[in-house]
Picture 1: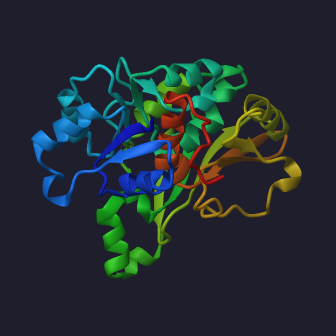
Picture 2: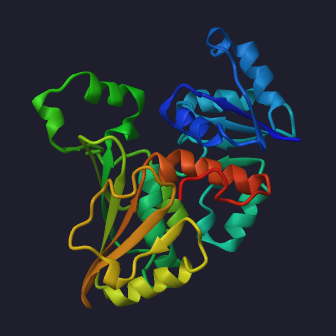
Picture 3: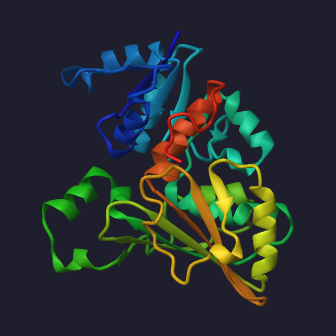
Length: 305
């Protein structure tokens, strides 16, 4: 019998991407509300409590409200918002952190899907801290370039409905160093302080390149550490030195649900760059991977790899 799934917020960018990945699957029965009932609290409550798995693709406040509506102890939740990423009782949905993390996700009732920029930073930094190669007190800086789909429907409409001269060039944001992904970046990596973070949005639809500077670390040592950590992973891999291009394109992994780490530099300093799709491993692809694990299915089922 198929597992039942409900996407609360199915009309948003992440919700639509999750729906696309589930549409052809016969092991999933997608519960859908018609347009007239999509924002009806009673109808939402009914569907939130009827599903085996609920995806929350909502603003933070609405995600918290949705969780409060769930009374069925069998309903399991994957929240794509920022609301619960560092909250007690929620499992952080990045299985590549460790075998224990993958097992925790598989058995969890509540999973917080990682942020896109955070995924790029954490995949490059967490293994280095865990292995003792990078000190927890290190002062790090991360530069992360994303396509405009990362801003959701409002930003997509802004870029696609009309153009102004400002939109033709990359735009730096999060200038006050209070970006919503910073708490999870610090907490998951176990850092004493969050990185100095510079997110940038540019005039292309999707794709992300998140680069962290690592002064004082040799590229070969960093690459070896990351390659060992991700050796058996299906959705995160480390490029060997001979595969590293002279330039990295942020859109190179658009349309895919996996992620590639590139280590570039020399014996004195280097950078690690995660290249992936902000809507794939950075959002909907990661959410479906977590669902697969929670349902005991192959974690790449329904994904584009």
